[in-house]
Image (cartoon, rainbow, N blue to C red; front, top):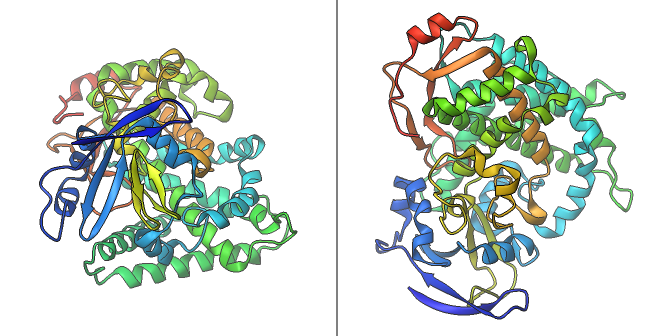
Length: 467
């Protein structure tokens, strides 16, 4: 491990430690370790310095682990832009929408989408969230064993298609899109590391293109007068009075379908898993939910201020398991980071997972501690340490939408159901490999009706695995 010096906002010179994880293999570098157990590999990076070099095949990337270096990268999206081979592959799937576009396009696109996420629009979207959360909770029966992520994915897709397109998504569409996104992104990541994309990659990309084209075509066919998000996008104009082109509309819909489904479905899945492993926290959340939702009614937009503990639990799950766990950036010019000169085209591995598991940023980082988000404790955390929704100018535009959706869904489910580990099925906390969104490899939970306390006590099973 070596040290260097850099200046932070004109302050006195600050030494930064440089290093690299051991075990890099010839040609492959750290790639096998990252693919084999990405969570373990990323969680340990902070041990090797403030700026850590990672070798992925022929590529050398640097991962900032110090809050000041995180600030520098997040804040300067002109220098540390979205680009390079990874985003090149992602654009084959998502196009040039808000999730993948470079700095030169980002400001225009964000300004055009911003009005669709103002508070009055969020309140309208929350009515859809409430209805769909009630349908999700109503779809289960006492004693059911639920495959959690697909159930949460169907919920989030129904919410996003109704708020985005004003239409309901049947389960067959949910399953088709989930499979297509998974296959396409897994293939894209394999191509980045110079492996074959797999036989289903091209089919998955075409499926996404056709499905989105059909959804937009159907939306246009219903004519004017629509009040959904897509109607707002079609009516939006930039500073020069120009609308989004047909290609831009397509790309934004694809990006919103991805961002509005897998990320929140992942967050809800991990939260339920953590609550079953920590029954004392689950009990406290259900006490809050019972007070806020009399009679076990579904949660609404106006209930959100009365569910702070529920929100803290979701935020802590987002810290432990950030869906967007790796955010790559490319240097658009030669620049200095942490005392190291990065060339134009240099790659930065900007990982919320790395920061969230760094004990220099979060005390006892592997512990599930929702109360670390109490206002007085959260105020003491480094400003740039938490990036559950990214950070800086590229912070997720739909962050408030996602927060509202997650709280409404979790509170509605816990008002009616008591989740437990499924008997005979050991929880598998490994994330799915070669995926852009950190989600459980396998998670089944048993749900018991809270109106049947005797049955709940009789059916209780000890947790089969770690948190």
